[in-house]
Length: 318
Ligand code: UDP
Ligand code: MG
Image 1 (cartoon, rainbow, N blue to C red):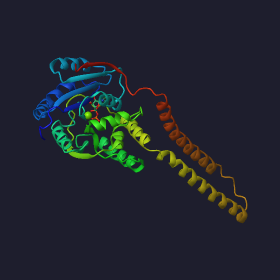
Image 2: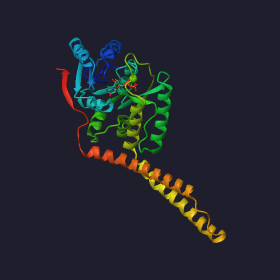
Image 3: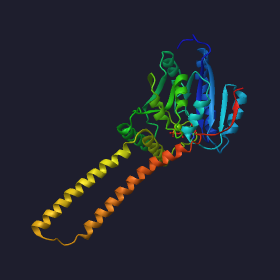
Image 4: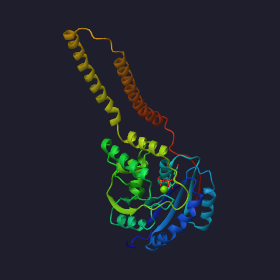
């Protein structure tokens, strides 16, 4: 790292939701690294996005502002979800480089120095690549692996595996993200979609410092659906093929019946097989309609043009 440009501002963008116990350890854990970053001649801004916390998170944050002038807090009007909170943070951050980071210290602070280093070498995006997810549950690791397999099989822009939201993005990338008009935002996909010169920094994912994970199995499942449907229309096309295959099989079966009747005469009526075929096709059709509905729902939500998030107030940063 060199200390040539004294005025560059590095913004940490930190979405928080019900993290009153985590913010303290985060600020302490961050202090040394931020001191080093400033020693290299950068200015630092910590932009917390309070994503509708119901506990004392906001009080802890406003108290922290009084201690540390580098802290800003964007208070959303309710819980909009991490993707929306990140979007709000990226929209509001002033930095020449933005670093979205989780508040639970799962993204190790030291890595920030490496991110900035690669940025100074001219990379516009520096992603943190998790080499070891031993601290995530087996379920989470397995489901993540399957998710990336499916997404990358169907999506037009590949989403890199084991890369989270923890990364550094240059101002130009943040401006590009701001220009994307879509309201339902799957950030990992959008980050990949905008492109730019990208470097990779490996790191080990740490266990959560305090508090509990906000992502249950159900929330992750929905995030996965969001990721797939927002970056690919392959699930829609799939039904054309399923329909063609089923129709083809039905035609072959019809020929078979015709010839069997011609050869062997009329068979006993097969009610059971008839019922199975009707139910099977009914089920297939419902799944197809469900997939259609998923995309129609997305179109509906986008057409309403509601904002991704609503800010109640901004604290600090004067
Ligand atoms: N988060 C948020 N809004 C939400 C859920 C989570 O802003 O609705 C924040 C949370 O406070 C944390 C980050 O997103 O800073 C990652 O959440 P968590 O650590 O619970 O996710 P995990 O690491 O388990 O995937
Ligand atoms: Mg976490």
